[in-house]
Length: 246
Image (tube, rainbow, N blue to C red; front, side, top):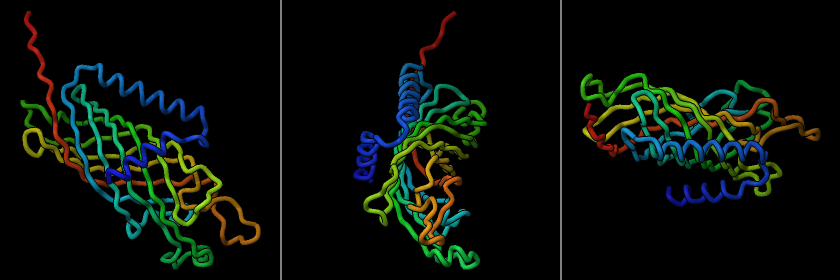
């Protein structure tokens, strides 16, 4: 896992082929949010990690198919400056796959017979909105559902294409839902489902039009997505607030 996360950071450092303006904007937003979170007086900071299932949705699998789930993992730092909003900084690594083989009711899939497996690495920052004050000592409500959205940089590498002519890195928009639960004192359980909207059609190594073989075509107008469903454990470090005297 650590090796994959290290490779992910190296890949992000060497991005040249994606749109430079979008990349600069993404890095700037990430830096501003990170610096802001350090300056704000934190209620608590969480560090944690977990594992789950990664899935792909695109030309080869137009619908989400759990049969093609692959293992993924995540390490993260979560900063909660107030009751409702949290900021999460995460590194994720895993893989995705898809195949035409089991799509018996699709003639194009049966004629195309394409399949792929690709490694995936992601660096993300997301904002979470907590519906309940789940760490309140007064209300005794130890859980909260939440929504999240943000920005991510990702890198993929289809095993079937050793010399790709397209960019292997890009920007995605993570969004989804989750549930936080206080297990015991400083320990927390987190269950989360999230999708990543990308701006590439090559996660499955398939896009565009092949004139010589029409069955090997993809739809470049429908961009690919990848998804992550995971469970994680985190530990909270509280910042002791000094009492105010009037």
